[in-house]
Amino acid sequence: MNNKHAVITGASKGIGLCLAQLLQARGAVVSNLSRNAGPVGQHFPCDMTNNPALGFLDAVKTNGPPDLLILNAGITAPGMLKEQDLQSFRDQMEVNFFAAVEITKVAAKIMQPGSRLVFVASGAAYVGIQGHSAYCASKFALRGFAESMRGELKPKGILVSIVYPPNTNVCG
Image (tube, helix red, strand yellow):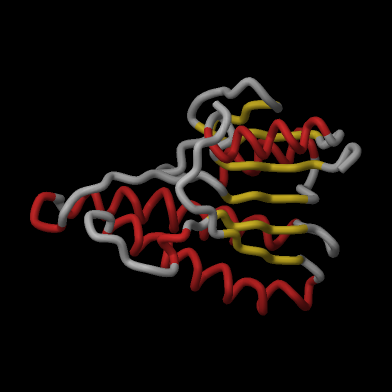
């Protein structure tokens, strides 16, 4: 990863922060797209609910097209269906799914052959979990989108992966 540009959404904490630390230690130029600046990489303010592609484009303008784009930002708001309002479903879909779609749509136009696009889903993208219906729905949607992108971006030489971490206890 020496001098390769890695863009990570949600790199100020959790899994994203751990990935940023690992990639920076391996020599990558890390761009952190998040609401809050993290301790690693160059921060580009990015609201995943309001035109997240702008933060991505700022990172590209500064550091060039990404060699690695990790779409990691996500939220969860557990609750039983009868207790959750529809806004909670909308919020989780917006951050966990639509932000990734919006950034991917822009990134696919500028990423070079041999670059990599990684979607961070969850084990919840495979099985429904009681009390997490909104989160599961957003991650199921992300899974379908990522699998579709694998075929669409293959002719351009962009490698697409999706990862399914379980509950984690990570740095930060």
